[in-house]
Image (cartoon, rainbow, N blue to C red; front, top):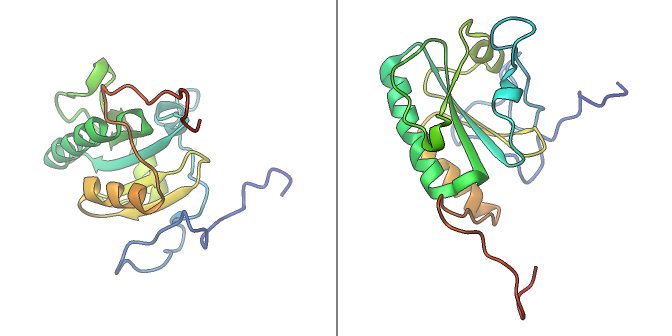
Length: 177
């Protein structure tokens, strides 16, 4: 109670439901709830939050052990990085090594979840995406067109990404910081 981890923002303007997607499912974190943190392997090993830590948005793309899904999701993650730069860290969450990871900067786009705990805790189907806001709350869950869905979310909320490899604008005379 004192930690306020039970707070939720399901009615926040930054929270969106997938059109045609049923409301909250029992035991599954929905948009507006705090993103669960999950141990990825051993109890003293890294957690999903540690593996995806960023001061910006995190898009978790769940592949399970499906190699074809992982390949498609890695392509989505690479396109998101190219269009959004560091504003959105798109990570494929896979239970097994699903092949070569072509992530930029040598960091890769895949987080291994060998026990499958993260997918179970998030209640995510293979191919499902979950956007985590910078404050750690879920913005939305999505099951298709991950790149387009993310771009619509950012545009709707007035967030303009800076593509990878592009310098962020600097403030100068006559510019508003």
